[in-house]
Length: 197
Image (cartoon, rainbow, N blue to C red):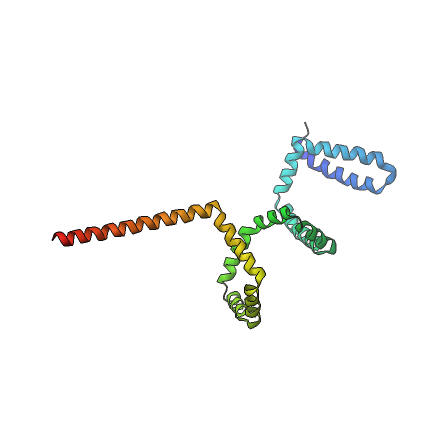
């Protein structure tokens, strides 16, 4: 078994040799052998422990945190590039992908909207937008259109045909009947008491 204090220097020297070997094409065999040795060392328990110890080091953590900013910047550039934009447009054309993204962001969006509604500037802006005469005209035009009316009619029909909605309506009607029966029963009792007195 390898000594712990020996693993890390061996690992680092292996990586250094790997880098040097990669630069020199004549030593391709040495590079492959060194690479295999480094990979084998990393797979051992001592190799794993050595990496864990390195990861626990505060300086290493700081370096990784700094590198995260570089990674974030790189990802952001990749996503906002022309190819990235094209990828997202194609991805969102798939209904399943769009649905999964929407579901995953639902709670965050809800929390964001709640926070924004508490912000006086945002609320003032929303009120300003809603009071805009042009927007009011557009909304009125949409609400009066035949297409919108057909859509509302379809939604209402779909809602009435829903088993859940039917069950809720039935429950509400039964409650209303019970309340009416209770009220008429209490009135009858009051009348009987009045005539009996």
